[in-house]
Length: 506
Image 1: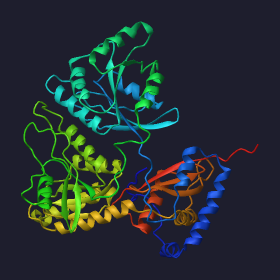
Image 2: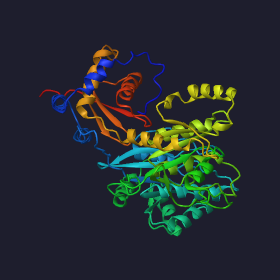
Image 3: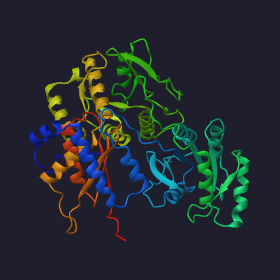
Image 4: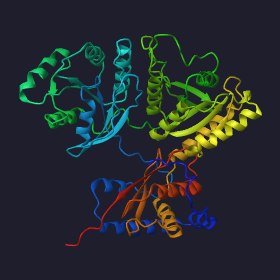
């Protein structure tokens, strides 16, 4: 659960004595508290994943721990070939997969899946626009993003229709990649339709796997095969360690991304190329700023091609998502001469969903008059209150004014993103909070927090073992206290729950 603004929550102000008690706790005391609470969990039913989380518990505030990067399986295909049904079949539940309607902008949606005790991530790639003008460009762009960010690709074709010109366009691009591609012949509902699947050998992608996403026929065999090509740990989603920190500069068109990149890199270096027909920007740029080297990741990703007459939002989302996949911290740029837009807020939400550190940069500050400044502050209070924790810099990318403030903001956000709270101190905080403000009763019972630990950093992710579901408002209360006591300026915080029942006595 990513945190949101707690402004509406009626919780007491932070007691300074609590901060003093936590800061005064020595290592031995923290370790004893952890050990005692951890022992109490033996009375509860825990699964293997619970034990992995507990094993990651640490007293070392400098420890940076990543959960293993799950392998990524992208599902691509035309609208109406059964991608959504296949996703639902694989993850074992019906999810609201957004319909593939022409003109509808769609984000990539990630789902966690499991098959024979192997866990992986499914990326459902929708949003293709099946209009004659833009189909080639749209399909190619979506497929490129899917392949770049996946370990393997499921290419779904409607066996009852057979290969179309759109399918063949995707195949030409898939053949050139080094990623494993599994061809799924969907809608093969019975043995009489097996010949429809066999006809797809002509696509040149190897064996078509006949399946019926709706009825489940053949899906088990398909998944068995998928596991033979997926790595145990993702080769694309794993974290890079060391080297310059990776920064994505994001924002809607014309807010000043190009100016900022050029100012930081030096005017002679062209970082963003808007030539018509160019599909990709230059590779990542290494830049010296504030006496340190930084890597500015490719923030453009896929460019909107000339053939596509619409779908700018769709491409903006793809570019943003692609940049965030490679970045550690995002700088979201706003043009202060214009009102905050829905697109601005959507980009901020994409950063929150990605779990990356966040800096807000308000560009063209030198153009503000007093009236617009007052209006802007009201817009920020109203629309950006849920990221009030993010460092904010007011700059002019064109003139270079206040650019020196960018580096301290980046460093602060990354330091928070890396932060780890010792398990003993976290549990001491939880004990104080539940005593100070107990969770309200649910169905006549009061949920208890049995144990808490920080499962990982980058972003800080906390797991609470509880006897019942905690209200979102109460989790926001815990998140707020974490920020007040440990800082976490510039990073989202995730607070997850594991509700566990007491082991039955035999």
